[in-house]
Length: 260
Length: 263
Image (cartoon, rainbow over all chains, first blue to last red; front, side):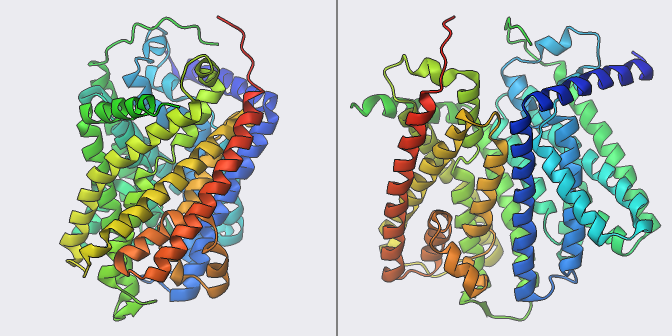
């Protein structure tokens, strides 16, 4: 299947998702507002913390606002575009991949595509914050950082959820792993050094989700820019490989179901 | 009403968890990693200070360890699971069974709490011990602490089922789950003890149910006081009563919206 066919496939699916969102308008709006409120809690929390302590490891409230411009935007985009990411483990364990495997589309892409409306609230919040915290010349870097951050989030979730192929039941752990990378990413990255920093960059890549992007937005470094972009692409590619390698072990659920 | 069937539900749930021990071990490791990160943050915040709001750094880390274990064992994601049961119609089929839906969910949440608490607690406390060493703890206070943790769990289950049943009106309750999680993290005092907040914020959050789920048990763990224990007990009981009443109202109203089409 070529790029053009993929694009037309994506266009058709997302058009359907938009129509569904409009059909369930109340749900769409309530989910969007819900996540927006959820993000307000975070910046209020950090406002209180920085009021109390002034700074944490050279980061001030401004850096935290930048972090909450990057993190909700990338998280929200993944939710909107690939909303099944968090349910992959469950789908594997319950044998729900059969439907996708029999079709001529790219299996992983097809499995992941699903719009979770709550992501819209995150994206609006992140972009809204970006308008207040970024200068115009920072916008291109912000866009690249959001994409690389999204790739890391998606890659990590794909990687941890794919363990279900190898060890069986892994839902709770995969969920905890996704929540952990989001929690860890939401803290000032400046407090880490040495081995801890290395682990949080290259083993559990939480640092690349928001910490390094914020540091690049405040003090640009070509070396770290290239590392961030290169690592996010390589890590995502590795996760895709890990998924397909696991897929060879997939056992069908022998489930007959209609999919509307 | 026989409790035996709910006991069986809980037992099956625990046996299921035991069968997939990898899942739980990895879950515990993740909790350990998050705690490890908290230690770094707090080391940076303490830098030179001996105490913050009466907490030494060791007390702070043990506080966070217990608070985190309670939250991760609390099964907040049950909101999404219950929401899915409402949406998919599983709740409708449960009406034909001789087991109460709310009671069954309660049993599942309780089983999950006990099992996850033991596994993740062991790992989180080991990480805390390894990173900051022991803190003084009087084992005579252990029964009161366990009562407080049990009260926290029951209050949390009531809220989780209550919010999950919002799915009768909302198509998707995942944003409600995220908001509930944030309320517990921030207002419940999982990320920092609420003593760190300004007085006016403390004045509000100390009376909300979330602080009785995490802050109260964790604070008593590192700094036991009878007056705080009694306040915590009263607060938990009051909120459990309020929660149970609200739960009954929302369940009764919601179940009337169920349409059964046979099949």
